[in-house]
Image (cartoon, rainbow, N blue to C red; front, top):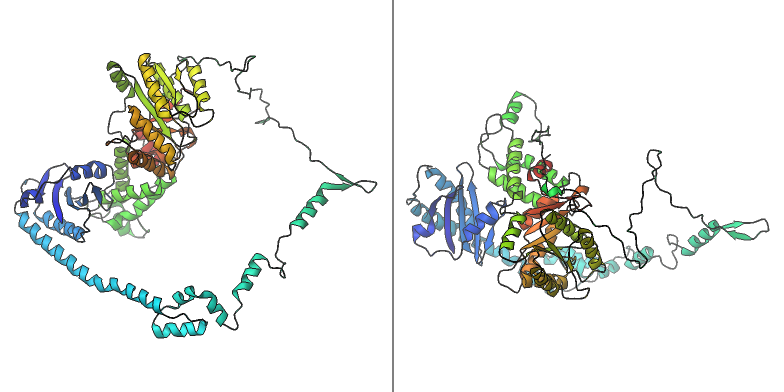
Length: 606
C-alpha cells in the first residue's frame, strides 16, 4: 500500500502531498527528512531505494525544473508499480508546473487516475509471469523421477526422448558415462598421470636427486682425494653510501640506560616546535592544465567540432556515460574504493540528467564541476569539530573532556594519541593518559614512554584487566586532579573480532566519552569500507543502551606516505558520515595537521 507521495522543490517547498490531498494518516517518524539528510544531501541519490523504520522510499528528479518526487510505502510490501507511477507523475506534473504557483489541488484527480492505471499494469504483469515461474519446478520434479542410465550413448538417447538436458545427466553420473564409452580412456588414468603413478614417473619430482646435486656443490675435492666442505663466507653489514660520500651520521637511536637498565629519557620541551594543527595550509587557486575526459569517439568535420564544444541542448544519461567512466577511473587511481566511486558517479548522473547544457560548454567540464561540488559537500564537516572549544565547555562544567582512540591493529593509535596530547599541551591544557590497552604486550610501556617525554601523568593498571573499568577509574582520577582532557588508548582489534569489539562497546557505553575517534591508515584502500562499516555495526549491535554511540570522527595516519593517493579520505567520510578531525603526517610530535578539504578535492580530480 502506498502511504504517501510527495512533490517538493530542491529548495524545500512542498507543492503537493497525497496525505493532505486525500486525507490520509500522517507518517510515523520522519522518513522523508531522513531521506534528505542521509541520502540526497550525502550524494547517494543514485541508490535505488532507501529504508527508514518500517518504510521504504523511492524517488526521482526533474533536474530542469528542480523538482523531487518521493513515494513512501510499507517496506514489507514489494510494490511493483512504484517506479512506473513515479515516472508517470513526473511526466504529468511537469506539464502543469509553474514556478509562481504554490497550490496544485487539481492534481489530486490526475494522481488517482495514474495510481489506478499503474496498479492495473502491475496486476497484468504479475499474472503474465505466473506460468513462467511455475515451469522450473515441474522440470525439476521430472528430473528427480527420471531413471539413471549407465552408458553415455543411452544417456544421450534418454535425454532426447524425455526432453531433459544432457549436462544434468552427465553431472549426476559422470563416472558411469566415461565407462560406457569403449574408446575413451578411464578417468582413473588421468588421476595417475596427474599425481604421478608408480609406473609413470617421467614427470615426477625426485627430492633425492636435488639433495645429491646440492651436496656435490658444497663438497670440493682435495689433493688426497678427500672431500672438503666449504662454508659460505659471512658478509659484514656495511652502511650504505650515497653519491660516493661517506656519512658519519649516527644511526643508533636507542635511548641510553643507567646502571639499573632503566632508560634515561630526555623530556620534550613543549615550546620546541609549533604543531602543524595551528598552521594554515595555503592551497594555490591557480587552475592547472588538466586533460579533459573524452566525450565519445572522435569524428571528423566541422559539425562534430561544434557539437563537441556546444554539446546537446538537454543532457541524457548516454551523453554523460563516457565522461563519468573517465572520472570513475580517475577516482579509483587515487585509491578511492570502487563501490564509492560508482555511487558518486551515479549520483552525479542523476543530478545532471535532464539539465540543459549551456552554449560552448563541454560535457566533461560540466561533469567535473558537478563532481567537485559533490566532493566538497561530502568532505566538509556538517558539525563543529573545534575540540578546544568543547574542552573549555566541559571545563566550565567541572569535568574532564574524554577522547577514546579506536581502530585496527598497527595503524598508529598510541603514536598519534601522543601527538594530540602535545597539541593540547601547547594550548595550556592539562592532559592525562589512560592506558586501556591491556591486551598487547608492551602497550603500557609505550604509552609510559610518551608520558615521560611529554611530562604528563598516566593512569595504568597493568595487563589482563577490564579496559572499561580502567578507563572509568582514569576519568575519576582525572576529575580529582582537575585534569582538562583524558586521552584513552585502546587495544587494536580487527572488525571481525567479536570478543574485543564487545569489550570496546562496553568501554564506550560505561564511560560515555565526549569523542570517539577512529584511527585509520591513509593507504588502506577498499578495506576502509569494511572497517568503518563493521565497527559502527558492532558498536550498534553490542550496545546495551537504546541510543548506541558510534564513531564521531576520524584520525588519518601515515598521510605522508601516499603521495597523491588520497582516496581513503573520501571512502572513510562517505561510508561513515564522520569528519576527518586530525591527519598524521610524520613521526615527530609536531606532525599533526588539519584536513584541507579544497586540497584533497583538487588532488582527487587532478
